[in-house]
Length: 355
Image 1 (tube, rainbow, N blue to C red):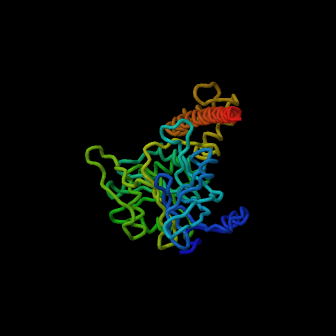
Image 2: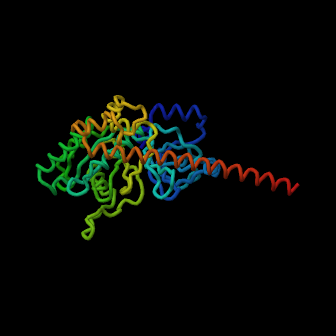
Image 3: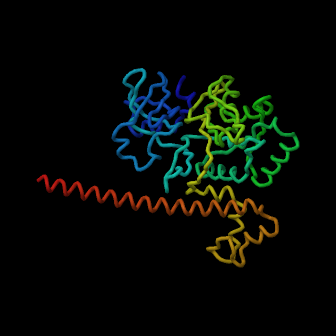
C-alpha cells in the first residue's frame, strides 16, 4: 500500500520537505494504545513511541500523536519505530477531556468528513446531534448524519425522524441504513470517496463497528448486542482505529462517547446555530445574553415559533458550557505558568547551592 492510498497528498509532502524531514520515513497513525502507536508506512506497520523531546515539549494532550496523524519516524526494525515529528494537521476533532477541567481529548486528526451515527430505535437525540455538529464545524470537518437500526422501527417513524432533523438542521446529508438488511448502504457507499478520511462519531451500541464491518465486507471490528438490562450500548470498541476500505475510502472507528463536551473556539456554535446568531444582530443590546433582556430578537423569534424552542435552549446550554470551558483553560494556563516559574527558580536555587 502506498502513502496516497492512506490519504497522503501534496500538502503533507510540502510540510515534510519544508521541515527538512527527508531523512525520516513517513507514516500514518492507525491506532493508539496508551501512548504506544501503530503506524502504517509503505513498508509495514511497526509499533512506535514518541521521542523524549517530543514528550518534554508537549504543552498538552493535543501535542501528542492521534489516530489519523501523519508522522515522521525512524524505523529500527520491522516491529519498532520512534516518532520524531507530527506533520501539521489539516483538521482535528476534539472534545473536553472527561474529568479534566480545561483539558482537551483528541478524537482523530486529518479528517475530511464525520459520520454522526445515531440508532433510530432508541439513541436518537437531536440535541446531541447539534453537539456533534458544533465539534465538526469547529474542526472544519464536513458532517454527514447516519441513522442506523432503521429495521427496528416503522418506515413512517424513520420518515418522521428525518423530517425532524431536516426541520431543525439544514443543509446536512441525512442517510438511513439498516445494519441487518443493509438497506441504504448503496447511498452511504456513494458518499465515501477514495483517499478521503471519515470519522465515526456516536454513542456506544449505535452500530459504528457494524457499519465498518459491512462497508469493508470483513469482520474488522468486534461487535456486541445491546444490554438487555439497561437498553444501552456496551463499549465494544476500546480504542480508535483507522481502516482502509477496498473502495479507497478511509474510516476511523471510535469508542462510544456518552459525554460530548465542546471545546469550540473557531465559530462552531455560530455555524450550528446560524439562525440564532443572525437574529442576535437585531437585539436591542449588543451584549444581549438572549435569556431575559427586553428587546431580544432571539427570544421574540422563539415566542413566535420562528426558532425551535428546544434548539434555543440547547444553544444557551452549550454557550454557557463553552464560556466555562474557556475560563477553565485560562485558569489552567495560569497554573501551568506559575508552576513553570516555580520550577525555574527551584533549579536556580539548586545551582547556587551546588556552587
